[in-house]
Image 1: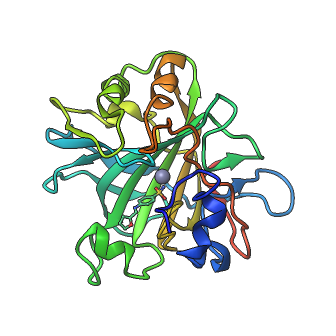
Image 2: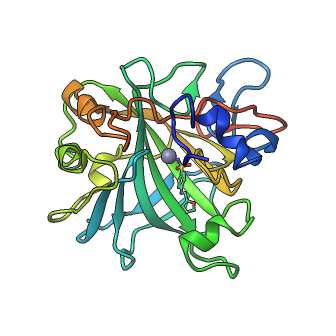
Length: 265
Ligand SMILES: NS(=O)(=O)c1ccc(NCc2ccco2)cc1
Ligand SMILES: [Zn+2]
């Protein structure tokens, strides 16, 4: 079976062949975040702001793995996440993106059916669990909150100077399987909105194989702006079959009995 991807032959509708949980799972991601009506997100006044401690990364690899571009700091990085719905501290593992062929599609989560042109995922793992001591072990642990992924929508607007070092590097990892060591320091904190107070949170999964149902999802209401040129740079990255990656997003999955909480009214 050809490795999974996003084409007709190996896309989300085929993933169940190698990954049965794609069709049998009851806490799959992404989902459509509905804000009104019966199954809508419910305001929870106990939800506190998310706290991130992201000292500028000094050593990292930027990789095109054929289905996304991923920024991965060296193991020594001390970046941490806590607060929000979390009861433990999480360690930063990597960030990557999902995007579309045009500005009307690309995000994985949706808000009342609306897609944004892209979505940034900041991936973390619970560093206080006695059951695992690495990201890979966390994914395989069956712990319902082994991972926490912060999702930020991208929308087209002004150029994002904080993300420019990343979008300027996309041409250097055009070919699938290529990677570069990130030159200099990268300040991820500067990319994010100042206040991490308004978000949706729910229990879900990885949105790509192995689709493990071990993720506490935190999706922020406020999109991050990037320019059209920055969006176009993503659409020039190749998928390893001589074609650009122009839609590496999984469609929304059934909510089943899950509820979505909102930290804002
Ligand atoms: N889009 S995402 O944030 O849900 C996400 C995040 C991380 C992985 N990792 C996949 C993996 C590597 C080893 C075991 O598993 C896959 C998907
Ligand atoms: Zn992702």
